[in-house]
Image (cartoon, rainbow, N blue to C red; front, side, top):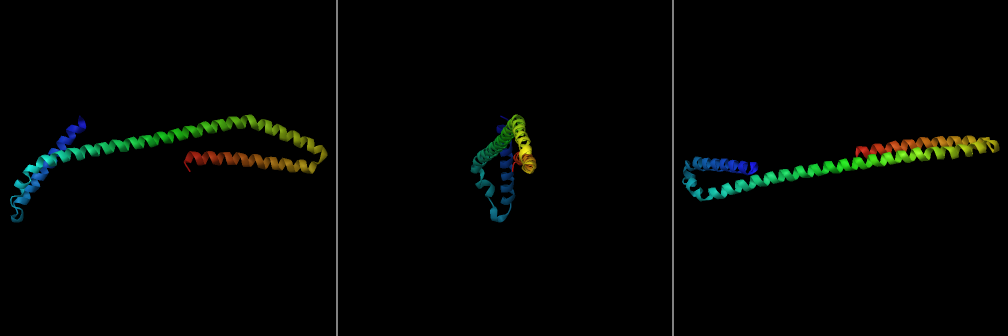
Length: 147
């Protein structure tokens, strides 16, 4: 009802402005009688004013709805990323100790057989863990930033 009454008021103003312009132009010799020619068209002008106002309001509400929908999609994606991140952290918390335990046992067994290869294996394990942690942080940062 608010928008309908607003449309009626704005259309009334629009028709009044049109009458004013027609009257002002009718005072010029080249446009004499212009105000009388448009009298039958005032109801059409009023109705078109109402329709244009209501279409503008409808477009506004559609744009608000689209914006709201995009915001909800963005929040849903962020929630999925957070859920995936927490699952990944939980899996890392479970897997890392087992992986580390097995790797260290292998290195321990290798120290008595070949100390040089055991040292190399320690360095490779450290590089692997460093790269894995760095890759996980980069992936989470890029997803939360939306890139």
